[in-house]
Image (cartoon, rainbow, N blue to C red; front, side):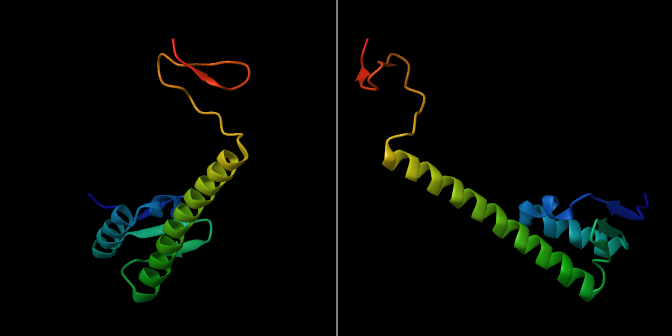
Length: 103
């Protein structure tokens, strides 16, 4: 089976997990398959294409960790202010004053 190119709206979405991204680059580089997104067409078989796609993958993975850490920091800040409402375990219910009560 022959493939000419892989088209993507945003190739960095594929690269959120580098354990999936780099094998794709390896296979495409060996088979002469191009990877294209909105920014351009890359050949992972060339050093320049491999470098650019590797950087896109690394930056995308970093963005994922940055987003996760910002969300966690937001939850912690909300908890410190006392505004974090979480689901209670089965058998507990919340009264209007937000105090916890058993059955």
